[in-house]
Length: 94
Image: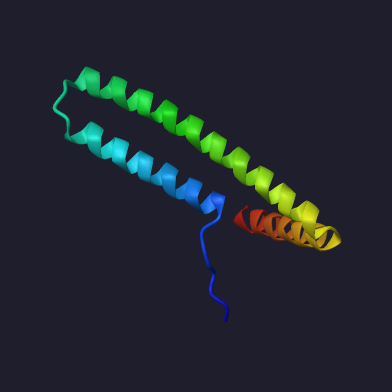
């Protein structure tokens, strides 16, 4: 088997977002504050997490689309197969 060398941008972004969320949660939960202040801080942290995760989703979609364009017909076949698998899984859940 070949080993994967290096780290691509999406892996780095996922790690950065997860690390940021964990770090923010630890900082919020270990700082002595009143209940009201804590709720406000958690609400602000949730908004930041939503924004960052939406940026990450956009970046991953963009990179995925670029990869499929480079692969041409093979990419279209792979994409359609994933759609079939997802639809099959969705039907099994019902």
